[in-house]
Amino acid sequence: MKKNQLRKTNCEKGFTLIELTIVIIILGLMAALVAPRMFGKVDKAQQNTTQTQISLLSTACDTFRLDMGRFPESLGELTNPVDSKRWEGPYLPKAVPKDPWDNPYGYRSPGDNSRDYDIISYGADGTEGGDFEVTFTVTTPPSGATLAAIQASVFTPSCAVSGCHFGATPAGGMNLEDGQTLGNVVNVPSVGMPTIDRVEPGDPDNSFLIRRIEGTVAPQMPLIGAPLDQALIDDIRQWIFDGANP
Image 1 (tube, rainbow, N blue to C red):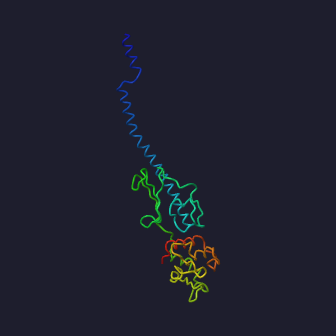
Image 2: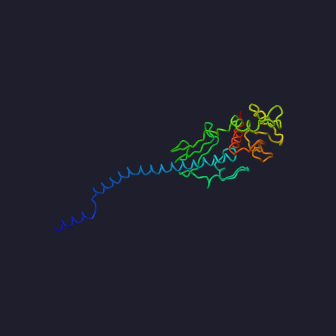
Image 3: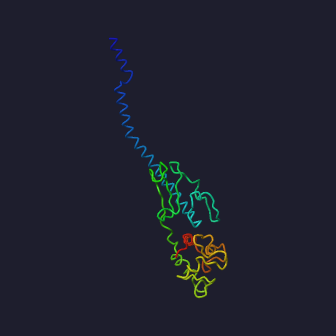
């Protein structure tokens, strides 16, 4: 009788080897089912954070261009002042963030395939072409930043009028009629400041035209009517920065 009671008591103290094996198998199966889902949620959160940060950086780059007439050469220019009075940053509330994998974002301007710029997260492994690489691109330049658009919105209605930059004897020898503008402004020394050109391709800050329309050199253009709004000035700046093409 005592022997049977002892055996019963020992069995009640713990699991048998078979029971422990079954429990371990069940836990392993649960881990195999749950872990991938949890890791998937982590990856999704990192992807969302990446997209949010890249959108923030893109907005900062676009604002930088409006002030400077060009896109930044590096993301560092968004927070570190550059040698220009037009810089009105910082354009980010804090330092340039790293991606969710603690890697710096890649940036190039111009971007691939004639894009304005690319902002890139190289993902978990931090290498180009690796796991979860995210690229944000800007492909469309401002629609008004062409000579044709500027001619129609600025030069023809505000400058190429009788008594101004029009006809056989235009003011300052600068004819701004349609078809005449390019040859009269691009790489042509200004009358008011002969040391700089009226339009210096690629360099709006050193273009006399920009100084006149922004009012840093008097009198401010156009002489007839109100000063140009900032959106039109930004278009002219971008056209010059892009090379002042026909």
